[in-house]
Image: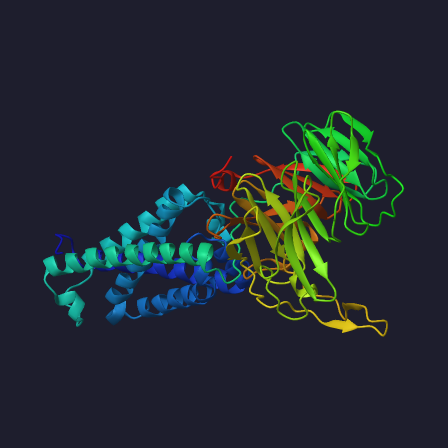
Length: 506
């Protein structure tokens, strides 16, 4: 701890290093305070501080300014240098974890430092760590401070211990934050890469299309204005072909006709008739299935012989999930308790129904609460998961008209706007801004939250930019791509490796 250098020179070096730290921390703290909104948003996207962004955004500039204040007084300067050393080692550990262990690299700096790359920032931090060590070693041991008078060996031990503790603090924060974000999230999103616009767009000419199905090289689109027609577009958006489905009973009083294509089969369903048609895509001719088809409000094919359904009973005031056998012409199973009633039993359990052929399970996503569930092919409950949104109970108000009909008395709070499944992943479109997010982003993009259906954990979120000012209303996922419909435009966006690496079922 005693170096063979003149006392005046050592004092000069220590003062210069202290001044550099004072300038650095003052600049950093003031930048954070003046740009607090953006700083807290960037911290919210940090892999280390997502779960603690609120108090970190406040405490870090306060600590930096306190260190500056301590460094102003020669009597307490060594303590200030120790605090500076501790903080800079923590910042350095943060960057090392970001570069080596994080699934993505965010930006959490401001001002001049924002122009540095992360590797340059790492070198910058290491330099300041070394400067703090030099200043502590050159500090005058004769000053009236217990820390300055301890033996050199103990002094070195304290420095090493401080470095280890600061690294441990950052590492523990990282582990806790990752656990909270993925398993106990309180509405903090993680955007693992900058939002990217579509890389291919196709003008459909109309805004009334929906996805009827996708296979390896073809996209099948239905159209609510011409419900019996299917538009086929190759996944490269170079060829288009339009075909008409032929029903053996085309004159039924259809009111909600939809087409689902799962080559080599396709299905035409209308729960208001009710009726189910099925046929093959080789000729697009479909025959009406005979039997006791119940009135249904949602339907999704399980295979060529079974249909997953949601049945709505106005008399019992409940929604139920069921499986219909096309060969048997009747319901094979019905679960009247799987959808959990919160208020009226119908509106509060409204949602979206998907059969997941990769997991061989039925997925149901509620519209008005932060929940989704899975059931097997017999509609027996498997698992339940929660989205990162915090709304657990449906915020709806239902009124009964004089004629006995029931309807929403005010616009409901929609938690999960749209969804799709692929492999073991669930993709949900949300219209709600989470913590530490820019509220203006919804003017330019839609937000998709991604969950792992195997364990219900949150994985990541994605921005899907509007196409020519049109918001995405419909989407499907296939392998590493998201196909979207935004108004009259069909587009495709590539998924980041963070998402595709989460596939356990390809």
